[in-house]
Image (cartoon, rainbow, N blue to C red; front, side, top):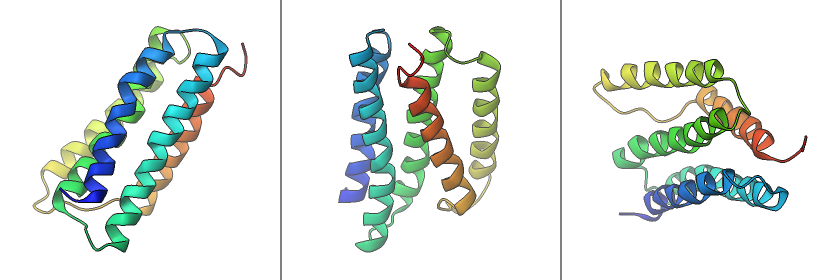
Length: 138
């Protein structure tokens, strides 16, 4: 297991804390959740950068990175549905897109890395979710 893949796995560690914190309505807890989410999201950039810089790109990393990205995005969105912060239809639209892309990837014989459109989609989702988590209107 190389360093970039370990960083990808570490991103998973923040998800349970993030989900737990979202159920606490206090302003302080919500800002802590924003910090956890942003730090976890930043590791998405870091693992890819290190994999390229250290020439440690692996099929495991190409598989795990988008999977962990989806968990980091979809898990808080599902909690935000429950908390009434986002409409379920919007989250299920995102989920449908992710499942469609995942199904397409499964049928390919090689595992491809992220492209610019996938990266832009991920960045926009991260910004939007951070804003949804932040206690801006409370």
